[in-house]
Length: 174
Image 1 (cartoon, rainbow, N blue to C red):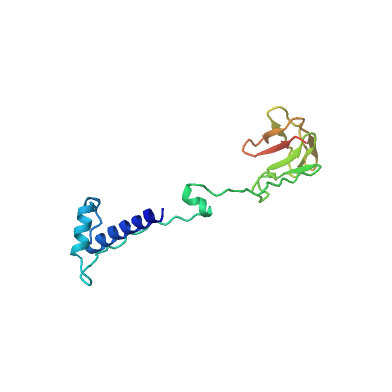
Image 2 (cartoon, rainbow, N blue to C red; image 1 turned 60 degrees about the horizontal axis):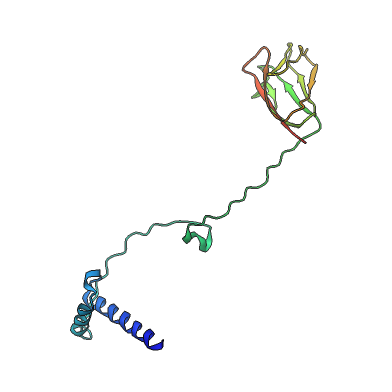
């Protein structure tokens, strides 16, 4: 076993020396006859090696550690989504000239099933809220209308007189 190892080391050393003396690392130049000839022709101090300039290396940044070389991608962990749900959500119905960014403020709320959503009219005119499956009665200025949702889902709505004024209620099963 030791002899085989020593023989393999000698062969590798001979191949390395032959390649170093010739300056050529082509596969076709590595026959045993060529190796022996190159070793015999290489005298101390006369061997030169030409090394081409290294090509620009591609840089890959990864956080996968040692597994990156195996194509293993790092595990990604998303922080948990936190949804705050209060007992009752209040949506204010604003006028078009209220200076706010939405006629419904907030324009999206989240509640559990059967929790109330109250629409408070802060405008100076009568308003209504229209869902696909229900519609509020006319809501006078300063008054409100409350509704609940028995099923989970997303329920978009709009103002009954201003269809561009929209919002949604996200209902989560509890």
